[in-house]
Amino acid sequence: MSTRNRLKQEPSRVEVFLEDNRNVLGILAIIGLVVYLAVLWGGFVFDDNVLVENNLLIRSLSNFWQFFTSSSQTGAGVAGSNFYRPLQYVVYALINGIFGIHSWAFHLVSVSVHIANAYLVFQLLLRLSRSRIGSFLGALLFLVHPVNAEAVSYISGIADPLGLLFLLIGLITFNDSAVYTWKRAVYVLIWSVLALLSKESMVIFPLLASVLVLYQWELYDKDERRWRVSVVGGMIGMSLMYLVLRATTLNFTGTIGLTGEENEYTTNVLVRIATFICNIWEYVKMTVAPFVLYLERPYVAYTSVLSLRGLFGIGSVAVGSVLAYRSFRERTILFVALGWIAIAFLPVSGIIPLNAMFLEHWMYVPLVGVAIGVAAFYDSLTKEQVRALFLSIFACFLVFFSIRTIVRNTQWADPVTFYLQELEYSPNSARVRNNLAMEYADEEKYDAAIAEYTRAIELYDVYPQTHNNLAMVYGALGRYGDAESEFFKALRIDNTFLYSYRGLLQLYEQTEQTEEAAVVRALLEKVSAGSQVTQEDVDAVLELSPEGTTNGEGESSE
Image (cartoon, rainbow, N blue to C red; front, side):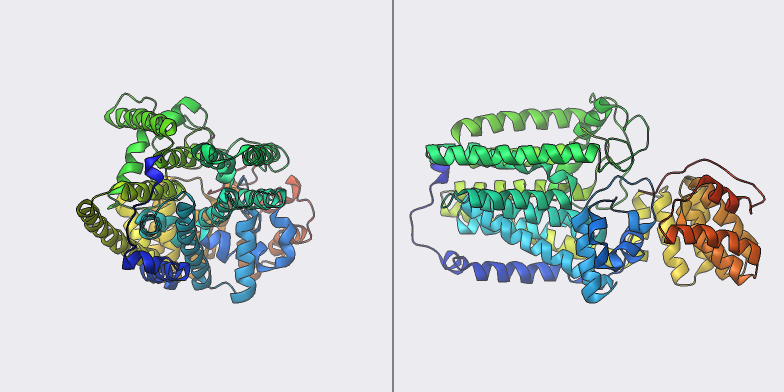
C-alpha cells in the first residue's frame, strides 16, 4: 500500500498553513464567493419562476408535512410531476420565512452549501489518507469547476448540493474509524435518510460506503468489520424501503421514473443505456474542456453504440473497469475514485426513465470522484520537480475554470442574456423561447414577447404555460378576446392548469362578465377549500369557450 504513505520530509509553509482547518475553510469560502459573486444579483430563471417564485406551498412552514406527502411541484400548480424532494422545499420555506421571496437569498444559500461541500470533500480526502495539499487541490477543483455552476447557480437545482451535503457528512461520520459505536451507526443512517429526502439519486449512499469499506478492509479489526458491514446493510435496507415507497405510496403519477412521456427513449431500457454510453464523451469533454455550457441539452436518443461516440464510451467503460479491478487488488485510492464516479452516474445511466438524456448538474456528485483522483495523483508524485510542474499545470486549469465559472455566472445572473445564450445552442427549444418571452413581458416589450410565445407554440404546442403567458400579454394590451382564446387553449392542453382559471376569472371580472366570472370562481373556490373538482366543474368553465369542452388531459412542463 505504498500509495497511502506520505512523504517523509519537513512540512512546507503551505502544509503548515493548511494544518489549520479554519484556514482551509476560509480560503474555500473566499474563492467560492468570488467565482459565484455575480449570481448573487441574479433573478429567477426557468423553473425558478414556477417552483420558487410562484410556489404557494413554500410561503408558510405550516405546510411542513405536506412537503413530505406530496409531489415537489404541488404548490406550483403543476400536475403530473413525480419529483419527491421534500427537504429542498423545506429549505425554500425556511429561506422565504427569514428573507422573503428574494432571489439573492436563495442564491446565497445555494452558494454556501456548495462551499460547505468543497470543505467536506477536503475532509473526506484527509480520511482517505491523502496529504493536506492533495486534499486541498481536490477540494479546489470541485469548488471552481464550471460544470457545477448549473447545480449551484440554478435555484431549482439546490437538490444536488443539498443531497451531497448530507451524503458527505454521512460518509465522513461512517469512515471515522476512531469510534464505531451503534450510536454512531444511527447518526450515519439519519444522514442517509436526509440525503434521500433531498434527492432521489442519493440512493447510492450505501454503494459509496461499500467502496470505502472495500478500500480500507485490511485496516479494520474483526469487530470494526462487523460494525461496518452491519451499517452498510442497514443503509441498503433503508434505501430499498425508500424505493418501495417511491414506487407505491409516494408515486404521484403511476409511472416508474421522473417522466410520464412515452417515446423510444423512455420505453426502452437498452436505448437509454446506449444513449448514456454515447454521452460519456460529453461528460469527459465537460470535465476537461468546459467551453460550451448550457442548460437545454438536446433530446437525442441513440439506438446503437456503433459510432465514434459509442466506441469512445465503450472504451472508457472497459479501461475504467480494468483500472478499477487492478486498483482494487492493490488497494489503491484509484479504486475509490473510479468507484465513486461509476456509482454516482448509476442513477442517470438509463436504468430508469428521466426527464432528460444528459445534463450538466448530473456531474455534480461524480465530480467528487474526479477530485479524489486529482488528490491521489498529486500524492503519487515523489520528485519535487515533477510536483512543481504538475502544480503549475493544475494552477492554469484552476484559473481557466474559475474564469469560466465567473463568466457562466454572469449569464445566470441576467435572465435575458441567459436565454439568448441558450438559444445559440438550442434555437428550437420552445421552453427557452417561452421563458425569454416572459422576461420581455416583464420589461413591457410586448411585441417581442408575443413573437417569442408564437414561435414557441409553433415549435412544440404541448405546454399550457405558453398559451397562458401569451394570454397575459394580450390582456395587458387590452386584447381581451385574444386573451380569452389563449386561456382556453391552455386548458385544452391541461384542464388542471390553475393559472389559466385564475387568469380567466381576472379577465371576466375586469370586463364585467359576471355570469362567466361566477362559473370560474365556483371552481377556484372548490380548489381553495380542498374539495374535489369534478369533470362537470371543468366542463362548466370550458363551455364558456366557443370551442366547447374537452375531457383530455395534457402534460406538465417538467
